[in-house]
Length: 341
Image: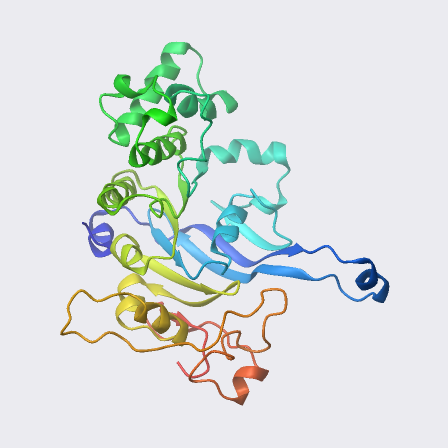
């Protein structure tokens, strides 16, 4: 499998960010009971994304990793306004998309697409492959004839290595394997020739033997076509192989971000070290990092004060409870939010 370093060498990554996210916030308000409402006070909310900032360069693959419930999927959906953030800026290709009306945003959606996690639920079982892939073209009114529509669908299927395309165009989802379904989902995203794709755990439900093909496909699209990806995953191993940079999330915030190799081989934050400690090392003679967090993940409705990891962190000191650490660059773009990194 190609590595992120290879992708940087032969890719077309630009120094200018295609996507810039500034202090993005998405909370989900909770319903209150009658007694709670009578008492008054602020309405409780799940702080899924709580002030996240980062940039993604053109042609780059940014990996977002973290435990289940850390907010990474919510953030991915918020980047495309599939869920509406409360605060922040999402500047895509120089335009703050949060300031656009739905009518103004529609043409821009041609450049922004998403691949959902579950290939079994993300497509209509009543539609065949041709109609599934052609649907974005029809919504955007991008084709002027049936022949043009067929040709663009064929091209998209060929790009995801579903060849010959005519053999698959008129099949239904239940006639395809999991890997083939995910390739169809990627073809549906590619048919509009987007600049940016959010890939939300695209291989988590696939067999290990199939994952490599999907990940290599993403690498090829980034390298040859300059497609920019935000790759959401809980698997640090695959993130290291295909990503140029990795951001680590915990309870709605970035705790570490930097070049993929640096984050994996030289982690600075205790949470990142704990995630890596959970990865099995195939060499029995090699010692892995031994950072173990105590306790359970705190409630996202009432996160701890200061550093959100301090109730579980082996390095915690009184300052960690009182003062929230900022993301500080420790060199070469490797940023960490920890008082004792």
